[in-house]
Image 1 (cartoon, rainbow, N blue to C red):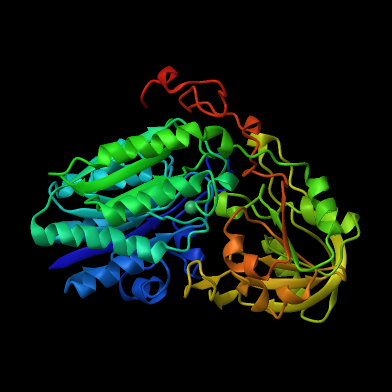
Image 2 (cartoon, rainbow, N blue to C red; image 1 turned 45 degrees about the vertical axis):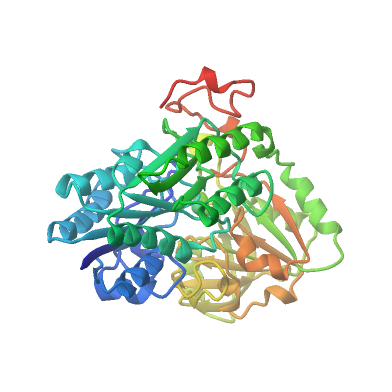
Length: 502
Ligand SMILES: [Zn+2]
C-alpha cells in the first residue's frame, strides 16, 4: 500500500499587509522553501504535528509513505498564488504517480490571492486527478469549514484543544478512521453545519465554557457511539471572506444516521450560548496597571492585538512602552520582529552598548494602525542563531528557528529581537538565549491563547493586554466587505432564520 502524506498549513489574516510567499513556508524551521521527503520527515515526523500522527499510523499499517511537502508558515496576509500553486503541485504530482490513500495535515483557514478557501481548492484539485482516492484530513480548530473541503475527502478531524496540544493525536484519529474504513470496506458520510458566528478567539478555548461542554459532548459521541470523528471548529474571524463560522462536523459509516442529530445538537448549544463567546477587552493602560498591583511573580502579560500567531506583525511596542512608562522593571519581553535592529546589534557585538530604535517598522493601514517603536540605549547581551527545540506541550519536539536573534538589555527589560516572527508558546524563545522567565517579574509575550501552553504553569498571574494590531478583538476596526451578513455578533439581534446559506 502506498500513501501520500503531506502538510499545508497557513492561517490567513486578510487584513494583514504581510505577504506570504513560498519562502515563508520554510523559514520557521530555517529553510528557504518548504521541505520534502526525508528532510520533511526529519523535521516534522517526530514532533507534535498531525502530519507526524498520520505518518505513524500509515507506517504501522505497513504503508509505504511518500512525503511531497510539509509547508508550514506563521500566519500573515493572503498566500501568494505562486506559493499556493507550487505547494498544491507538489502534492498533486505525488498523487499522479499513483497511491492508495492521501493523508493531509491542513489548516482550514487559508486564503490565497485567488481562492477564499485554499484547502477546499487543494482537495478539489486532488480529486480532479484521482476522483475516487480516499483522503483523510486533519484540520486546525480555527477552520472556517466549507462544502469544498467536506465534499472532496472521506474523513476530517479537528484539534480538540486551544492551545493546540493535540495535533499529533488529531492526525492519528483522522488516519485511523480512514484505514479502518479501507480495511472493512466502509464508506463514510459527513454531516456538518456552519453557524454565522464570529466568536472571539479569547473565548473559544475548549478548556473553559462556553466551548467546553460542546467539545466534551463531541468527544463523548466519538467514544460511545458509531460516530468515527466529531469536530467542533471555533473558526477564524480575521478574514474578509464570505464563509466565517463556528462549525460542527461528524464522520460516520454511511449506513448509520447519528451524525446529523449530533451536529444539530451541538450547533443548537453553540447558538444558544452565542453571547458568552463575546470578549470585551479593557483599555491596555488599565491592564498594565492591574499587572503592576500583583505582588507575586512572574506576571505574564499577553499582548493579544499584535499576535503573529493570528497574523500580527509582532513589532508594535505599545505595551512594552506603557509598562516602562508605569515604572515596571525586571521584564523579559519578546520575541519582537525587527530585522534591522538585529542586524545593527550583531554589527555592534555582544557586550557593547548601543542606542537604537526598536519595533514599529510596520503599520496596518487597513485598521489605521501606525507601528509604535521605542528608542533606547542598552547593552547587546547576547546574539543567537534563534534555534531551539520545543520541550513544552505544543508542537513538542520541533526545532524552531527565529532567525538570528539578539537580546537587548535596557536595565528595566531584557528584550528579545528576532529576524522571523514567532508566537511564543514555549519558554525556549527566552531560555535558549540565557534568559530566565521564572526569575523575572514580568514576562511580556505577543499571544492570545497559545502562550498558555508554555507559560501558564510558571505564571503567578496572567493579564491580557489589548495592544494595537491586526488581531484586535474589536471587530468594529475591520472593514468587512465580503462577509455574508447578518453575522453574529456584528448583528447582535439576528436570528438563524435571517441568514441565507453561504
Ligand atoms: Zn489554530
